[in-house]
Length: 86
Image (tube, rainbow, N blue to C red):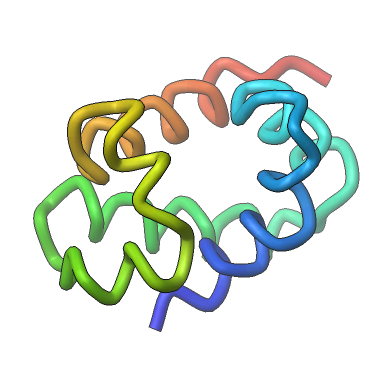
């Protein structure tokens, strides 16, 4: 579950550059299929289809605390993806 979210965090979201910059790097490097999969997983989080304890372990509670919830974080991620310009 949340394979692409974990992939994003591990490969892009842990660089220290900030999540918005990490989204830009992700969009520049990944295929349309992987981007679509990430968007689907983020949409599920926005809808509340997640276990908070599980996401705390998978992607870290810091993101939840920084954005007040995983749902708010996922909304921002989707916004950054949608506003990305190559």
